[in-house]
Image 1 (cartoon, rainbow, N blue to C red):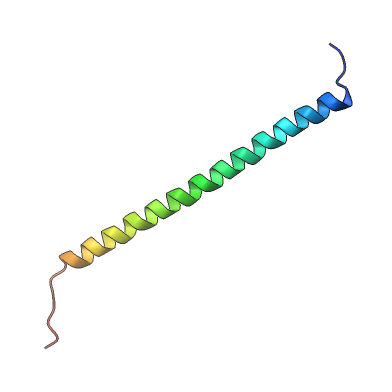
Image 2 (image 1 turned 30 degrees about the vertical axis):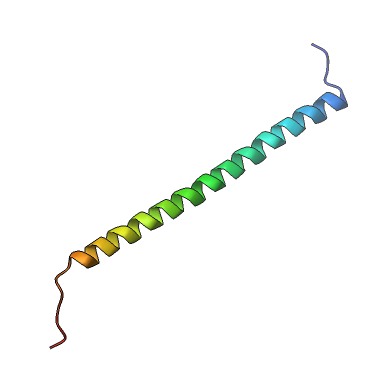
Length: 59
């Protein structure tokens, strides 16, 4: 197997860096979307719980 020359090494390094950047970006986007969905679900549950409580008059 021939040793890697500088151009091939830089090409592989670029590919690896691109994969790492895309992976981290995907993870961050997924985390943000999941956070928003969970926040909406929790807020919906709170709203339903508050709506189901009996009303107390001010007297």
